[in-house]
Image: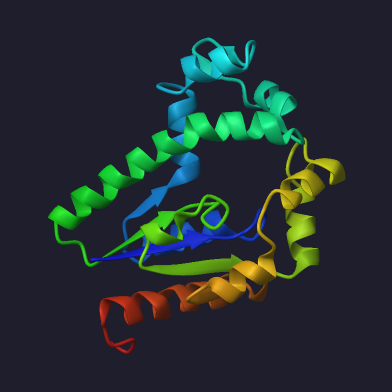
Length: 198
């Protein structure tokens, strides 16, 4: 079985690309979705203890949490120390179950793959990219996003050029959905040994 790591900086189209892998029949473990689940479950009491006032009705209030950690490296490290091991355990269970089922290819969607030293957990890496102006436009269109917030997020991420340099495959989502979908199909064909024409 091949474990493909899917990553990319904020606003590069990673979630859309993950869906394309799913549509191509490849099981995908989504770190963001896992975090959402953990924030409403296992992680909530741990986060409330570390960051009082961030949990409402048993679930983490992301806006409250962001207010306490964004732009504060020490607080961010504290949060990551809580959440990363839980997400990793969830991903490990996902990989183990597919290995047992003899699934030929799975995708681990890991937003901070390079930042968290996740390269060793995967066999190959695909980086999703887009021109900087496209990235900027996409991210600033998100509710509650500001130039300052975007700058803080980008400062905490490995630069796009460096990610692309370390990637086994690169998908440029700035070229449109059809081109991205074709790139996904090519990668799946290469990694599963299927003839792209078949």
